[in-house]
Amino acid sequence: MRVICIRTTKKGENVKKRISDVNRVIRQKMLWISLITMLLAAMPVCVVATPVTRTKLYIDPSRVPGPGQTGSPGDEFNISVEIRHVEDLCACSVTVKIAPFASVLVASAFAEGDFTSEGGTWPTAFYASPNIFEGTVTFVIMRLGPPGSPGVSGSGTLVTFKLTVVEAGDSRIDIVDSILLNCDGEPISHQTRNSYYYGATATLVRVEVLPSRHVKAGETITFKAKVRNDSPIPLYVRVRFDISRAEDGRRIVLYTGQTYLGGGLSEPRPFEYLYVNEFSEWYYEWHNPPEYLFGEPDDLYIWSDTNGQWAAFYSFEDIALAGREIADITLEGYTQYPNGPDEGIDIDVYGFSSVHSFAWLGSLWGTASWGWHGVRWTSDSVLDVMPELKNESELNGLQILLYNYHGDVFNVMRLDSSRLKVEFLTIVPEDPPSYLLGPHEEADLEAYWVSKPDHIGSYQLTATVEYTATGDHWIQGNQKTLFFWIVDP
Image (cartoon, rainbow, N blue to C red; front, top):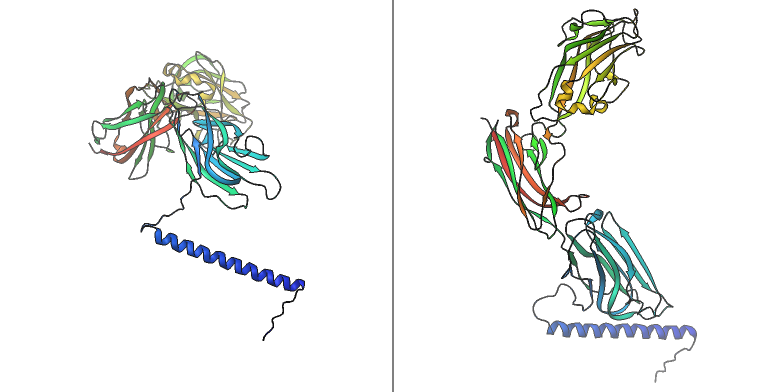
């Protein structure tokens, strides 16, 4: 007979315990295998991709605004994050996302619900971390207590907060990230349900290119857009046209109410030179006839050799804007300083209009060789000093006075010609207009393109409706894209 002796030392007790643990794990695995086999045998042919769970995490209400509410700027809505059918919840993290940059809604008044603390009877830690640029708020709740403390089970409110409408537009209210943990630190499988804010919006119904999609160079193109205010409140609307030419990528951005006259983004503006062509003597101390300054450079010039000498008044050629708008005006002179450049002497130029007198427009200067030069000692343009010259009659009435600043017989200055470079906006008016639509009102809005031979090409046009209730922020709505061609006449 074989006798098996079991030692009762501490080491032996550890061995017996380890064997017992191993046997328990094996029995558990065998039980799980048996249960899984039974479940597989009872399952239908289809395979469920994710485990079914009764635990649900959702935004309440599921639709905002609700019955009897509106979505106007200033309106406020109480929102909550709810949980249903959870077991042993000890901690959670939930991130809710709305439209970014506070463009439509602003979230505030973050507070913990009464579920995790069981009505305030259990200590908890609550954190809310908003990110206004991303439009997110992350909430974290943890039940506190000694190790082994139980979690909370059932259904209730995890978080409450407030959404305030700041502008027209709509927005998702989504749970974009969520973690639920039980008291063993294990994740709790759950489903999520989101919400949506249906605010004031406008729709681009259709867009047309008239007179046709094939336009002869020289014709005026009309971009016609029908827009609709879909909301119960008034909205300001406009339509943006993003246009690109296939042949070279020339890009144009045009809004309804504007007219495109030529050029593209980052291209030089169209311009026109206005030369001095008139003298109305008030005080003339320079040498040579004052008419020698008229027109383009022609080797006939006026000159000065004494500090403080004046030549006034000169005027420039008249201009007819014919619907164009002035973007900028710069002053230039065709000059020569026979003894070379000298920072100590200048031809100071002063402007006179119905608004300004002795408005300093800068200082013309020169080198030993004849050449065109702008002004120095200031970075201002003529319009910066005399903004009234954007007006056609004011520009045509401009007079200038020339002043010798410290020139002398050893440092004479010569001026053959002077001109204004008048640059024009490629799109007028410069600021796009907006149009007020009443509740559920429709309107036809138009933009125009005065086509030219250098516009010939194939174009893609993308029209986007933009709208606002307050004027603080333009919301982009739906888009429509089409193609058109400018062809040789």
